[in-house]
Length: 141
Image (cartoon, rainbow, N blue to C red; front, side, top):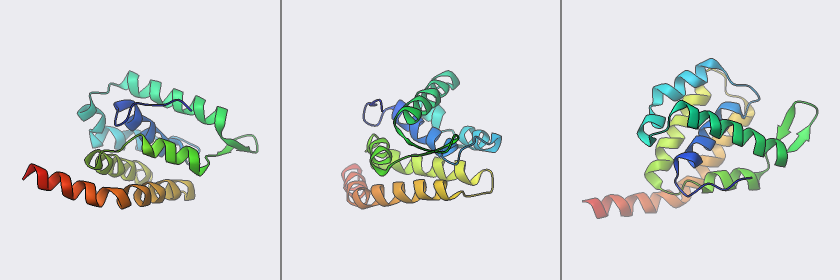
């Protein structure tokens, strides 16, 4: 698995791409939800850069994940945690989680793999973010 710089646009793109493909297919409604969220524009990411991130993520997952049959792969918790750890800023995490929620809800079906991804992100990030976000908001006041 390739490393991304902490809180980089590429790290965010990988998580958004994962939200799109974790259920085994990419629905057009998920792509629409991504564009509607405007998170890529806020990060200064164009379509080509996002496409490159999707391809790189797929390559990395195919190389490192466990296979179940011909078409299914399983992403282990350590790999998932590494991807989630690449986004550390509490405010950015909040925006990424919101976009991920929009993406997985776009096709009006929550797959068990999508549910697990969102649940893991929420649990992993919420424990450390509550204090950091409060500290940050206090410092800005």
